[in-house]
Length: 431
Image (cartoon, rainbow, N blue to C red; front, side, top):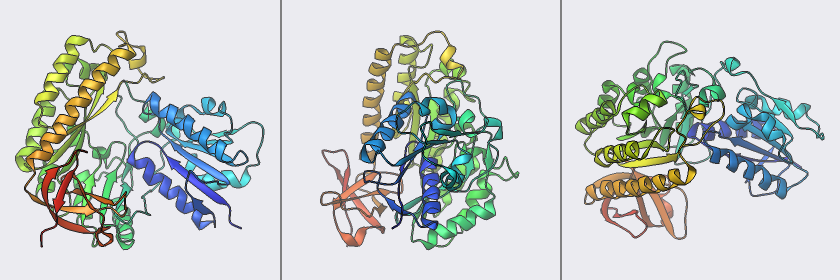
């Protein structure tokens, strides 16, 4: 009888791509993959540590796995495992902790492992995180995450990711095109390009991100590409122009701003000011008027007093963004920001976060309303959710329709008619 393995992912799209790669390794060795909420012989938890809340969620995942099968082996991998392995070994039930380099050899470690009283730790120094491990997700016929880059050479004062992921490096364009072909052969229509600092693509071989997307455009079978997240200073006009005329790269940009205050941006060691960011959004809208622009914002960074928050809020209010992803500042060990004066009280951060969440919802509704009456292409997902089926337009408007099995995994033209009480757009398929 085959051993059962369950895998669970926290964090960024790249983690999902890497978990899918790990799952493939288990299947190749004859393991049966089951859902994380089922009883398994091995539980693998791929963790995130970008915020304190991510750490807490990973701890909860470990506890859930232990409760489902106290005799199972519990393996914790990923960024939380890389940075805080000693903390993790103090959590009851953990057997094996693998860093971001070691997790790709997970089966070797498991084959040598015998359940002991003390968990094993295998992690590398951040300076040793130099190898590139290809990853892409399969299993969902609708879309796939394709990892094209790993690591980061930036030194933002709040961020531990360079410590967890190492220096910027990438897969060759030739290999990435081949991986996209494999994804296309599985029936997937949409690929999301993901990485830690995707616009920095090319550090390993001198290529550029525009070189990559021009080659991916020619892969048969893939009809849509999205760029997961790209730094504003690396989103050059030639990329925007390419997306504007592309038949496959969608009018959807996800750009981290982090603060609408220049003083806070400087303390964060971001590589631009708010005027540069505003002009970048204007540039997108000039070339692609209907583009979705999602923006990351951190609230409550050290030194953000009431005056700086109001300044940031007013900037965000006037910015032509489609949605804000709001992150309460989280004090991370080993960062410069954790040692800064002017730490903002948790209750104040919570109140400011709520204000920005309300602004984000207003921006989202404004963007949706702007496109009512249009006919746009929607890729529908493969799930019946209580009699409904959902999909996304090219410019990332979420559409709801009554479930029809023939729509799953298909791209259809949809007339966007109205916004329902859940804040989703309802539409009709012409003809």
